[in-house]
Length: 528
Image (tube, rainbow, N blue to C red):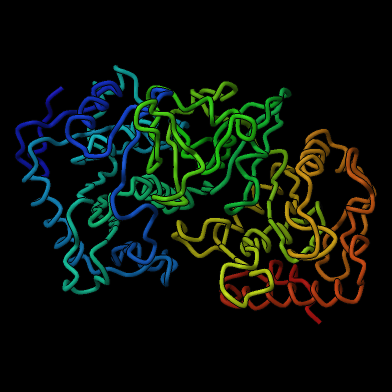
């Protein structure tokens, strides 16, 4: 079990490799303040000051071998290799001062032809257990023959970056070098940085091979060739709608699409649990058991029962658990080519149809746009919905220009005959404040109509502003709901709001125009 890290210039006596969850529980309870076993058997931990990712502190090394492949800007901030090595040495120095270190080896990607070998070096049992859940766990034989990893993540998150080092803007720095095949974490103990670091690596390497990496959930129906992908930002229903008792879950967050089909990148799930109840999210609730990891939740001192409604530590309370803790999970997490691509949006303006069928060009456009809307009321005096755009429904993790992923998506859709849909889980009958949120039962009926094939053959009408093809009927959904203009009392207000949202789409898309084709640009809505 003891392991040497001398190849990384780390000389610590107690280095434990691939401890079992039970051993990691013991280590955390002995050495990490705030750790406790909850009534359901999960390990509750605290992530310190940072309870979410720090995207403004993410850095990618600028190197001649990858320079021209990377979408530089606010998502991928340039870092000199010299500065990377300063931070790497700082992390190594810190890790060398620890009495105990943990090493975790695992795979990213269920497809053996496309998986990466990932090694985690960390000083917290919490981080080792988290990645034990989130990476794919090798068999004993695979561990014996694991060999050299493809990438190593050095998590020294308890130790800050030096704010006075060039190119540093805070005590937090999350640095990635594709050429050195290393990632260094300083100044944040939030475990999600490791998960999304692995995803960022896959987002760079997979498109180089013609494989589309995607921030989406995926499930599979009882028939062959019945895989659906669900894209959507937070609050759109990606997790809820992909959790279907009639369909097997391939994964809830990160996937790749190859020439052979789709595969889950991860070995586990990382779900939000604020307000969690068994009634609302039975699959997630039942997955909280021994081996699961609860981040930043509160619990009753004596009973150790978790209060999932308490956001006193953070709104971003989370649970991590192995994929097999979901009753209807598909193991291995691999599926055929997707039959349906479902883009989810929560339109708080209340003007997008509940469901629309997309052409490949429209699919590319809406994929690059990654639209949803936040409701008003977050700031004093704000009375209207706020549009939010995140390229490819996961801009924070992209490496290439978004058009690279969109073109791959369209090419694979055309080759394999996948249908694309835009599903609005937001408001109907008016914008937020005057209309009502779309009933979940209607949205589930729409998803059922997509899966059954009913909506593929349904009669369609074209939306005059967005150019979307809208079904005129769907079992379980009132016909008047399908055309949003019909649900507004003030038709002129609807028209003005629709054109306003179209204008926001156009304004957002300006930053992508230089890197996109005429086909994608042709799918823009009409603002005036």
